[in-house]
Length: 347
Image (cartoon, rainbow, N blue to C red; front, top):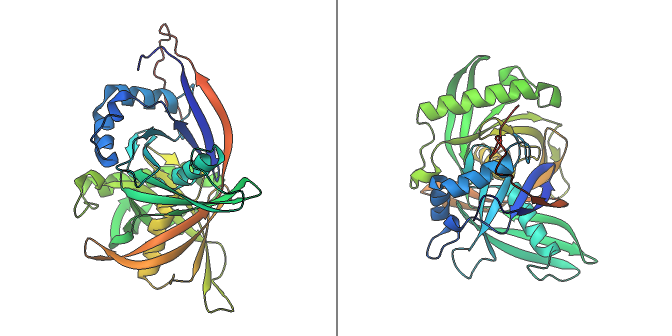
């Protein structure tokens, strides 16, 4: 890939969170014989892949909170797509909002055939494993998509972390990536737009402190070790007991991930991690629903589809439903005389 030729992208958003799709991905990550997890390792070490990620993520073509993915070959014929997710700080292991966007785009574009009315499973290989976006169509239009994730589990309960706002206690859970989860009020904050600057600051502090302490070492795969994001939560209403015996749990969250990025959606893999924490304390059972709201008011609906284990630890398989919409298609150009290439991050 030459650095001066135009780069085309297809942009969607899921619950307000951008997802920039790149079909013509760097050659370094599209070669034969690698799994998607291995391709992420290659991408991290590839000057070509990192340069293109930075170009599309940073200003003036992106911004500090841009997100996207390079399409790559799947691990085998059992999946429709493979993808390497990227953000302002590198390549992530999982992304639920991106999976919802990719599945919706694959059906809407005709890349994966779908009936005018019904549900179509789009199977996607991501660095954390194989996931599915079940895309629902009606009258030939995508209505929503349900992201079925790899098993989610609690890595640690009640971990104390010193911050500039005092000591807080977090749970660490894996929803395809490791997250620290805590009530926003324990840091003296609310999950609302006016508190975003402070939420970013404390989210970064918690992530950095836990990673410095080695508090999130993956039991089998060191490539998935480390806190990816901090999820700050609050209740949005009382738990509702339904006529069929199930419960509706209402919460809001903001997920601060990578280098201080704020997820505008309720965060798909983060929602899976949140479900794992709620399940471990009995606050969410099979048959119950979590109505998970984001800091901008978009909503995911999550439930437990299976109780299982991961690495010998009790785990749950989660299904997270959300909506994604097309934003536009772009053809970015690169002027070799531009002294600001590949771009900059200014928050």
